[in-house]
Image (cartoon, rainbow, N blue to C red):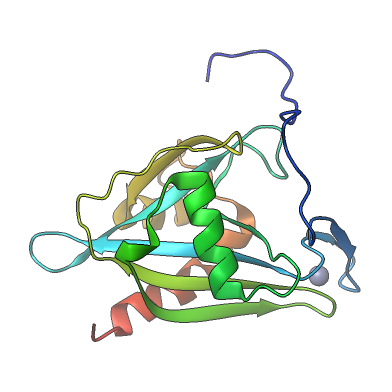
Length: 180
Ligand SMILES: [Zn+2]
């Protein structure tokens, strides 16, 4: 990242019903008046082993910008967590839901807010992902081995979003237990 200009939100960012901060009784503020959701999309290598997941390098102006997490965002009014996760993955990373097969879900519940991760497989091993809006510096297939190394402080270039790092072992377990 060589751009030294001060990061600012894009002026075209449209606020949707559901966008906003929640003052949670846990003492923190969380994004998403109806909660938030994200897509943990994995693919297998040619040997049939889980190999990579789609990660988003978060724009510097965003909350905890510069870290890597999964595509996701706030639930719109009346929207399910699954629909929100798939919608955000399409808006942010160009992910086509036709190639997304759900394997499970993981909910991180707070007193006044929750974050639901949809764990899914990409049925297209050659699916190309790329930033499709201003919320990302990069969108990439990242090897699971790199994420594990980052969790063990052995990959200084891959700085994980703290909430994602915290949830990762549970998300990975869903993958490994999947008989799909
Ligand atoms: Zn909270």
